[in-house]
Amino acid sequence: MNNSLAERASAAFQTAFGAAPATFVQAPGRVNLIGEHTDYNDGFVLPCAIDYGTVIAGSRRDDLTVRVCAADYSNAVDEFRLDQPIVPRDDALWANYVRGVVKMLLQRGYPLRGVELAVAGNVPQGAGLSSSASLEVCVSQAFKTLAGLTDEALSPNEMALLSQEAENKFVGCNCGIMDQLISARGQDGHSLLIDCRSLDAKPVPMPSQLDVMIINSNVKRGLVESEYNTRRQQCEAAAAHYGVKALRDLNEAALLAGRAGLDEVTFRRARHVVTENQRTLDAAAALAANDVSMLARLMAESHASMRDDFEITVPPIDRLVEIVKAVIGESGGARMTGGGFGGCVVALLPREQVEAARAAIAAQYRAPNGEPATVYVCHASVGASELKKA
Ligand code: GAF
Image 1 (tube, rainbow, N blue to C red):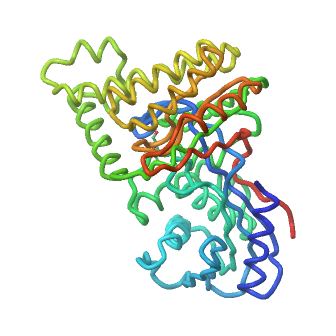
Image 2: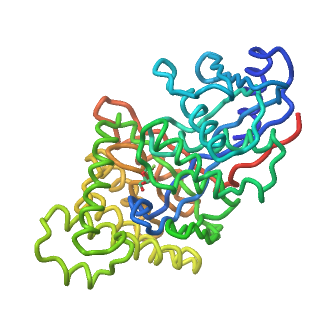
């Protein structure tokens, strides 16, 4: 992703600010292999960073003014000051991801000076691949690099946490920590098994014979935020029913034993989270052992659980999973990835089956509006970093 994005960011910088940038930083989007809606239940997730993301070209200023140019929004420029209240804009939503992160950095006491930034990204928006987290973490990285802060001064975990807080409190989306954490800490050629309670992250090598295929259904997602928030509330209600801090603290036996008095829907929501946590741990072990048929089984079970218990898939997404599974059988896995209600399917499949899967999708799938799916074959990539000195 980096070269063409860096060129676009550089060109936008030159146009907006009339000079060359001092540095470039990047932060990736992500695809989650398994562990959906578990992060805000203090549970486990297994995402990898992808080679689609955000690049920022940046330079320091001598004052307290921040100027940001968005290459993807016709080089629109947002400007605000570090010594005045930072408030959201309702006429340029992209700017709020930047403003929110800066506000959280200031609230935590980081010594910021003014900057000029130009932003370019290529994560498809609204597809469940974390374009927002990629932007937020990239902004954190830009300020970190331009302020000369070390990892000790501003760790990748802290970057992820403050980016999540910006999304929760400034942008207004009540997401968990997964997306920002993998964007900050991704590792080349690895997925990360993340414990969302302790924020420990264990790298798991991706088997060399498998490719990561992401299939964007191009289904326009509706009701995402309200449904997402409803699922969170149902999970919290279930945890309260069982008397635990979070659903992470339940196993399947306890789930069944304490079921009396819990309504059917809330029980099924809890069952998804409890079983998905175990599947995620098992999938990380299967991936590490290159046990592809086990991985395929766990991904299929995860999809069924999201469809039947958590009710976050939609028929076109279920159809895409069926099409891919008919090609790859047990030699790979496929499931919906991300928050749900549209978005993408992720498949882990042998490299030699990629073209057959692509052909089957092209021949057999159309979104309700007639659009075909968009297919990306990705490489598990490194998290937020400085790219190069300009
Ligand atoms: C979205 C959220 F941002 C994540 O925190 C996570 O909950 C995910 O949906 C579902 O697993 O991407």
